[in-house]
Length: 73
Image (tube, rainbow, N blue to C red; front, side, top):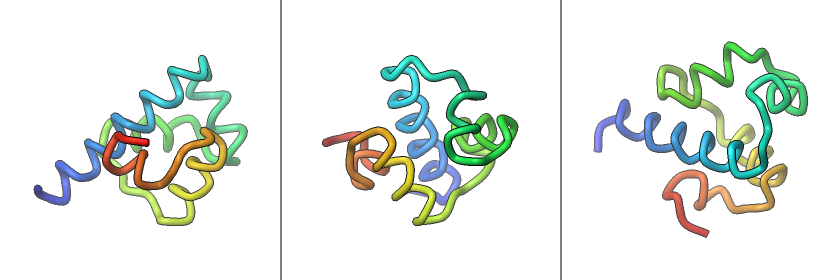
């Protein structure tokens, strides 16, 4: 798996979790204190994210970091 494929996979998993909770990009950005543009780019794999951000997302979504990386809980 390339770095780009890895970012795309994580982004898809974040988008899946956000949609499952019926959150808009704007709502998620506000909860994380990010811009909606950053969330958009992260979900589409154009931007990577830090391990701390993955941790914050996992807490928010009540899942695991592994679930955000691999798509399994």
